[in-house]
Image 1 (cartoon, rainbow, N blue to C red):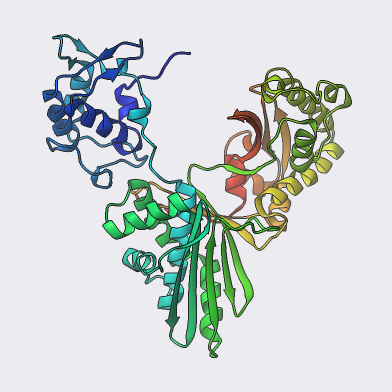
Image 2 (cartoon, rainbow, N blue to C red; image 1 turned 90 degrees about the horizontal axis):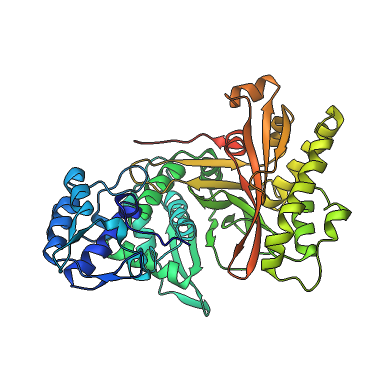
Length: 463
């Protein structure tokens, strides 16, 4: 396996965090491992040159102060000089080498951002919704209002070894307003530390701006707000951003209740998350449940014989997954060759989407927040009966490519479908199986067509 190096394309990712770590190691005189297994020490004077070209400072900045573009890539002070420097790094032995020869080691990769973007999004959106109810005015909430809600959370209560929650009890005129934020310990601590220090990671800056747009424009939030304002008696309003409790029977991450009655349920995703369901495991029972729960099909009997009780996950991945995917694809392709087969398939496919996106609760919407500070926006998706009616405007085809994938494409045939789809076909969902550590993860992910036809609110973007 070829080890990854550190060319400019890698060093500019994630707001330049790899470049910052590389410069800091060079400044400290640390030996660096090369992709060929050797080690080298870069002249320490190179550190200031790189930092000046990238950040207009002889020392590296905090990640929250880095200039980024619309995809969270570093925007250097002088990209031409930076790229030239990276091609000829002076070493202590008098030679030069390109940064691409330096290994992207564990020390360069570090512990990542220190938080999960999707989890942090739950806390930010919960605080934003609380701020709307606090102000009792949609359109007037500011980023400072969201930050204040998060700053005012109580000292966290330990829920378990790896989970904590914070609380805020306040008033909104005659109403009592309660906000609960439950997250994994690492995500909770990272979010609150950023908020209190003011040193906010670019992805979190993007989430703040996108959450602000959502709560200030969402028709669902407006409806709840009107309900609260119109009820003149004292209400008890609860906003529960719960990313850690075992909420059996629901796919929601954010709950809004008024006087004990659920009003709105939201499932949160950050912009780069497409997965909305999974059934992990490599045993025949796991994979049978996965395909039955997504496409409504059983694994053909001939292929099931490939499974044995003694097989390891690696053996299933290497020898069974591809034949299973191929046989199911062939089975569905035969079904889709007739109009009746198309009609039956669309009902099953919708049921699988509805199950995995909402656990068959049409009150649950998915909100996708963009995490790019220079391209803010959100998309709100609904999976109720209207989605099925739209899906019936399409014919479908399935493709088994690569061998551990099944991709379902929609081909527009009705007038509404042709308004949504500008190409001859577009991917609705894809299923795939791949290993993660010792586990085989079988997931269903949304394609661009599903995102488009399930929207209740189109992207609101700011360049």
